[in-house]
Image (tube, rainbow, N blue to C red; front, side, top):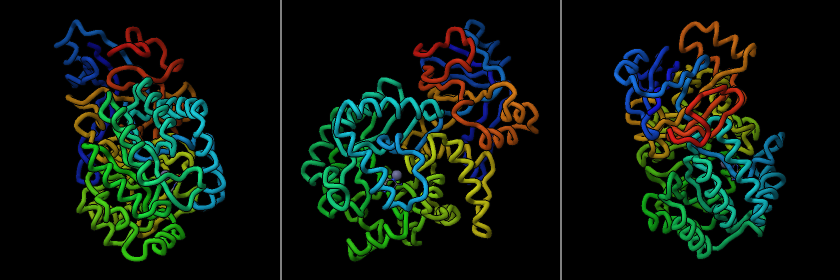
Length: 443
Ligand SMILES: Nc1nc2[nH]cnc2c(=O)[nH]1
Ligand SMILES: [Zn+2]
């Protein structure tokens, strides 16, 4: 057992529903085989467990591991292509790179780069858009399993409107998806997600095969894109004729409590109503929406309709892996929405980046906060001495202020250590000597 002594912040109760920030300035968190078994003032927990090994996390603060509900594994190398709207960016930047993952050795290198970057940013759980190539999806699951990342992912399918080398058929997509699910779904921390790229690139027949696969793999997840860009939406309407964008998925049983839709920047009220009724979730990806000029996410309307919202970095349209940056961008975006804005405080941002994501992925009983009974998925934010974040934290006016500074100033360089299930999986030099708590050691 390890007893961590630290300052800890989390949001067990939803700040959008009256909850707030939970803060312990000198907490003791007792971890046994990756499970948090006790939490309280350090002195009290220590006195009850005098034999536990104490690991002091001095300076900085401990947060729950970040949960990313929308990120593309094959796109790490195309981050930063600015100045294009969605469809042009896909054609010129994203899809040529995605085609390169046909080569397994290339995919393996990219998978390693991807998983390493996610963990370094403090993301411990992610819903990941996989690849159009099944062997490349195997590489992703293998890299995630090796690293410890909690991952939900799957084969991307499309059968029109992309490059022909990224197209599949309903039969092949089903068969390859089923085989991947049999290899990875429910193995360790991995789960399978049925993943049509977006309705624009999928015929009804392909989406029907997705519905079949979702039903045939019990406990599988579903994810796709929705209502991201006005030209995309108009094209989907022309292709499908009747009904809304969401209807394209709904017709095939793909709108339910295990469905996560990325973006939803331009929803109708009827779509929001249906998403809420189905207990589906929306992955809000604010840096991507800004970079592609997709629009201003209507958080107020999602909240009014009771639609669950979490955060996604949407690499590579998004500008990096940090969900702290996504939180800041979500905040800034709301500031410019004028009278339609939702003013987000630091507790809202932390909730969106942790518990809300865990909820969207059906993992809230395991992760999302650092209370008793949760797995110890955590990040230690400890900036280098003399950096603006270090100065800000030392002069912070209370916990909310400290957390606001983290969202404003922290980068992956400030994530000194990352644990999943009590095992350190990332962080190094900045973490100093945590005797008995080494990378790869069981907690
Ligand atoms: N942002 C984004 N939107 C998409 N819609 C379909 N594919 C993509 C993608 O790769 N990125
Ligand atoms: Zn995306």
